[in-house]
Amino acid sequence: MKNIFVMGLDDFNLKLLETIDEGGEYRFQRLFQYSEVVRPESGTYPSIDELRERAREIFAAAPGGVDAVMGFWDFPTTVCVPLFARDAGLPGPSLEAVTRCEHKYWSRTEQKKALGEMIPDFQAIDPFADDPAGQVRIRYPFWIKPVKAHSSFLGFFIDSAQALEKVIPEIREKIGVVARPFNEFLAHVDLPPEIAEVDGYHCIAEEIISSGVQATLEGYAWKGAVQVFGVVDSIRSGRHRSSFSRYQYPSKLPRRVQARMIEAARRLIRAIDYEGAPFNIEFFWDHRNDRIWLLEVNSRISKSHSPLFLMVDGATNQKVALDLALGRQPQIPYRQGRHKLAGKFMMRLFKDKIGDGVVEAVPSQEDLDRIAEAYPEARVDLLVKEGTRLGDLSFQDSYSYEIAVVFLGADRQKQLLDRFKRVEEFLKFDIRPTSGGAD
Image (cartoon, rainbow, N blue to C red; front, side):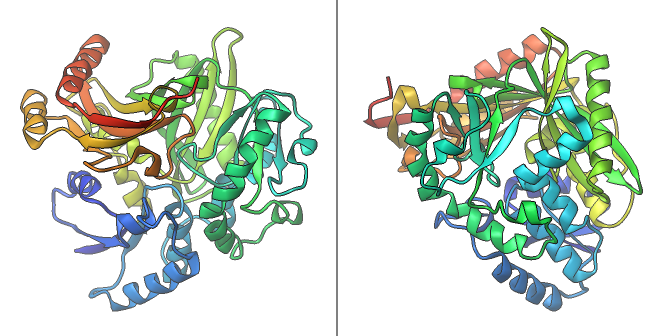
């Protein structure tokens, strides 16, 4: 059996990984606890250098050695996996190529060179400067976020200098959660001087492009070839359309639009010398003027899409990450799943409606069993428990709280949406408000 170390492996994703191991070829082993490197209970990520040393010790002590190291979470997994793989002499992309994806300012700089008009206007902003608003040279409104974050953490819609000044104190207070360990990683990367000046304690401001339809391409680079194996629609809701409400696979975008996105993805991945690893790239298509915008590129598969690929294609996208981690070309089935389409639904509470609150009751095991009986393929992941204070949830977007996710398959669009409505009826949460919503 091959020893596969998986960063932050949890039970939910272990069950998915086991679906691609019918022959019992792999021994999936947890590399650090989920509560340590994905959703740290302390609210603070561990030191990257400390994790690196611990990984070395774990690998050295592993009976039979290490055959692959892989992951599917965002930071710090995205930077730790290639670093640990390099240390262990295992396949993986270069740290510089990964950073051209993960450092959002450097990434935008490279994207602009490769794709020109598909990239919005952007700039770096130092939130610790005496007058951050005085640095602004792009037009209002814009989005601001740290050069490294995830899940829309510390992402804000800014329509004036006053709005920027209002969020700066929160950015200054919380940006170090990711900036400190990200800067540790950057110390291992050969950065151009103009990028080295923009470290993890900086933000990027970007022109608003969130109109139209959003879709994510899942793909990989292998020996100079760039392959895209799936396109997933991302449906947004809420204030400023800042929160995801559903992912749906396969995409309903016109084939010609998907083809343009795929060509853009290939140009970019080759331009940044990204090789031997998976990626996902988010785009917007504005149907009013037939314009395509690139939102961001990530150096990983999307774990949110894993059950969708299983239900539609017959294998999770984790198989792509596993094959690449083992140094072989991915082989993934196509349209061999039990359903014609699948969706991930995010159940949210919006801050302008509830403010803050404490969870007093969550769906029971009996409720979950009823869902499983009605829809055997359904997967439900509760993200809160009794006693959870919504305001204490980590890495939420700036406008909502995500309390549960539901994965469902179907054969028609209406059937998929109707099934989710029925599932929602079983998923009742009792929330006691502790502060009012915003006006």
